[in-house]
Amino acid sequence: MERQEDSMKNKGIVFGIGAYVFWGFITLYWKLLTDVSPLATMCYRIIWSFIFMIAFLALSGSWSQFVKELKRLWENKNYLFLMILAALLISINWFTFIFTVSEGHVMEASLGYYINPLVNVLLATLVLKEQLSRSGKIACSLVVIGVVLLAIQTGKVPYSSLIMAFSFSIYGLIKKRIPISSMTGLTVETFVMLPFSLLYILFVSPIGFMHYSVQTNLLLMGAGVVTVIPLLLFAEAAKSTSYITLGFIQYINPTIMLLFAVFLFHETYSLAQFTAFGFIWLGIIVFTYGTTRTVMKTRKLAK
Image (cartoon, rainbow, N blue to C red; front, side):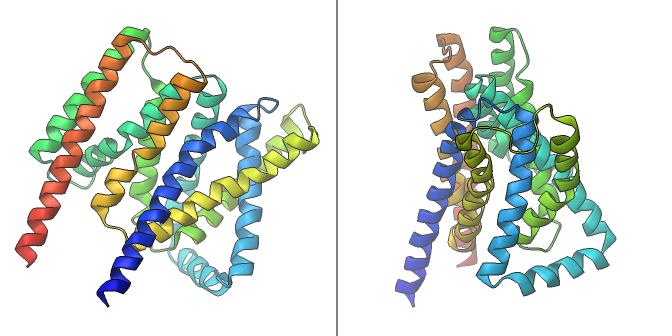
């Protein structure tokens, strides 16, 4: 029995690492779509993600579960409203990320995912009235110092990073209140935004539907696949991997992005910026240490 549990945990860790590595490398994918505007790319991502999810639900035998969860949403109008709000937030997050990467600010995009976990803690304190620990207060203060230093050094507030972090954190907060699977959630979210995406592509965009080169069209179709795969990997990881472990490996994604920004895309990375990121990394270390210590104490008390 213990061997089986260990095997499940190890499998979960592999899935988790796979998800975050995948999310890190997606940065390169959006860089390939230079012929498509960020807004059009987001619309195609929504369209093809919805198509891919419908196909996946049908082929994986999850259709009956999907229908049951849809009925649950329809019967509870509060859940339905929250799903619409979640769809709007994830679309904002996707667009901001694609726009930031396409504009050559991969480092700024990585910052959004570095500070995201601490924004989660901040929102839990403000919205859910959870008690913020001493390590949490120190960590949030360090991150604020880092962001302010970046704003002073670059002469502008890192709006993209903040929009990405807050939109995804609020999105996560909303999703926790809705008792449906991640597969159903993504399908409904993309369906909500599907009419707006189609309207833009068919009637507003200066370039017609899929009127690009064969290579670009294939990349746009693949946008649905690269959106869904890491989500499914993460969903599997979350089932058997501890909160602490996921807390550690979640920083794989922004670290990969930061390395791409510096060594592949040659974005400016001065000593001043390194100092600002140093405060943010220190905040992350304090936060991770505090979280780990709290969970360990809780486990000891439970025994």
